Length: 354
Image (tube, rainbow, N blue to C red; front, side, top):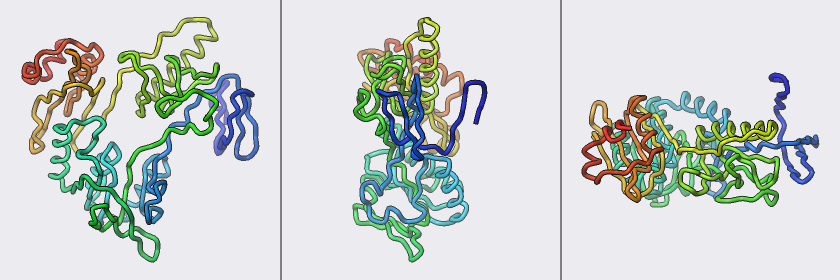
């Protein structure tokens, strides 16, 4: 399928072998493709409980969310099981967002995760306490510090219960699992340098092999603002890294200079009536400010992260577009921070002064 001049889209074709020295790719059907420049954008695969040998994990209505088909299957299950019981395994993005969706679609929802609080890679205990209380007020039950170790199913193979490590059993008509993903780098193992679980690139997303680029989830790249290397799983970075790689490729062709990638980490989420954004780095001391009462009609609060006397990260729940833009500028600028008490008292005004 030709999308436009010089762009051809080839669907239903799985690449099963990549030979970077010969610049060839081989499909499952045996077709060979040659290239001059290769852009690796393979993304991540979802981690399944069956990968760990969890008993009964292949039962029907144990669902994941990664591909369009997954979303279609989840939608169909929600429509078919309204009024039933749903168990969500995992307390991260997928767990929180889908727990809200399931509850809003009239299912009885229980979240299960092993960590001491939800979203532990980003949230502090104080931030997590707000969301956990808010979800509890909405009727979502939360079980922390345990994991799913098995599933029961009926004669048709449909899941009926989730067995937990603590010995308890939860009835379930639907189980949604969100326990992370793995970058899809297998095709290129041993052919490119790897770092931190991904394919190592420079600031232009070129790998250790000239003419081969990697973007999105699979790329471990220099995080210029923090002078380290990171791999970021987020749509914002996926789009921007792809744009940077194309700029670099075209720049080489034209003999023109391209600025190094200078990404500011950005994450966001929406669930129920809530909406938060985060920019920067969540390291150092966290200072909470604002109204973090989950019973408030319109809660609005945030957090700053201070390291070495500078504000390196900012989180805001319930912010306006201008306020979200202000915390982004603050995280980028890494301004010297006031004392914790002054920062807490200033709240959003500290970010708005930029």
